[in-house]
Amino acid sequence: MLRTLLCTLLCGLATLPAAAQSLPQPGDSLYKAMKERVFIIEGSTPATYDYRFSKSDAASIIDRLPHVHEHPSIDAALTDRVRDSLRAVMLGRIASFPSDTLLTCDIFRVLRPHFDFLYDIDPHYRISIRCSSPLPARKSVRKSRHLPFTCMNIGDTLLVDTSLDGRFRTGDRILAIDDITADSMLLYCYPDRYCYTSALLRHCRYASQRNRFRVLLQRDGRTVEVETGGLPLRTNSVRLAQAVETDRSIRIFEDAGCGYISVPRFYAVNSRLVRIVHKAVRDFHSQGLSNVIIDMRRNPGGNGGDLDRFISIFTDRDTVAVSHGERVRVSRRTLNDYAFLTEEMLGQNAELPQGEFVAGFPTDPSMYVGGMKYYVMIGPDTGSVAALVANILHYNGAATLVGEPLRRNAFRFGECLDGHTLWPTCLCEMAISTNESDCCTLAEDGILRPDIEIPCIAAEYMTGRDAQLERLLRLIRENQ
Image (cartoon, rainbow, N blue to C red; front, side):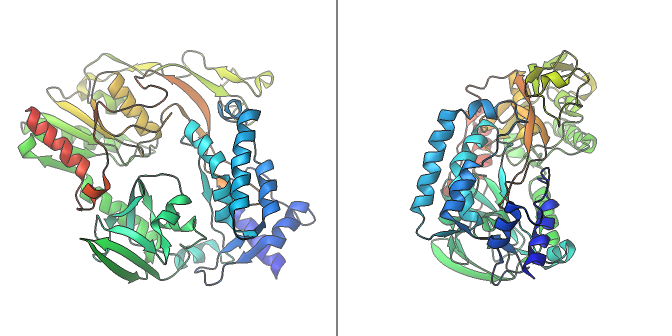
């Protein structure tokens, strides 16, 4: 029976993007080690696997942390001195655990200094804890329940953001979920400003795998407890995405002479997005508005198609500067990406020749909408392609950036590959960037700061209103 369960676990993990490495096989020492550790979490719904690790197991995982050979900068940054320093911190964390047994989330906590170091180099590089169940994938998804709201993390304060259930109100402070305090949840997760409760709880001993949730909230100075069965995974995800688009898409603030457009992400095909934004900006202009806010605080990125037409809406420059140059880390997985790469280049960073990267592009004059002052709202969750768009608009004088600084190197790396599973754990790399660009930018030390800095203050958001947007609108009114 245990062998069947272990095989199911391995097959579940093999479906992840991280399946670039071969699975352990019966008879392998790694298979034996995993077989000894795996168990089903008591009371989990759907049934979910976890591992038990000894402190010596955790120490051996530290020593086996993989190099990231496909990335153009990480291995160079992880010098022996840095590795030794990080290793000392991680071993200290192991020693600090009161119990001799560590679970998957504890291993993540132990390895967090290493992961944070890499995340600071490239925000694309993240480690996720993945779930696996003895149930077939479809049945497991059907049985999975999720809390009907998203979260906003401001420092050490966790708030309800978008909600599908009136018992959870935007701005409610989350004190605990099933006796797991907000402080505990945030210790095990990346510092995302906007996040799903399922991700927070999954990193806390798979506490997301339940069919009932008890949430302790603070509202108007009172403590409120709400119990809910949540919603099915697919229903929850679709309805939350729809709620975000409905609440924050296109609006007009007449007293500020301002139109507002939220761009929540870039898509595999951006032609529809470009049409919507272009039409909205033209409508604002025809109504006599003179200011436009493009909100990309929640935009994690996406695909770069049609970005030349998107950027053309905001600038009358003939050409737009993008990058001084770009390089690719040559590996077996990138060798066929460019015709000029050869076997002899394996392990090197190869400069892309002109024509193989976007140094700049001509704009489309028919897209430009003049006579408007453009503001682009950014924040720490503005990532990847969205961060690049904000940088291009800023560098080329097309928009004023407002909000909070981007994460370090938010737009420096790209062209991501699927990551690897960190055997023998349920941890896996979400993505590995292969290209590094010398972007045309006004960023300092890799951090692009807004022209108008408006910090995110938890107390202001506990009112349920968008405090940063309100403060920007106040500034626009004052400057009219």
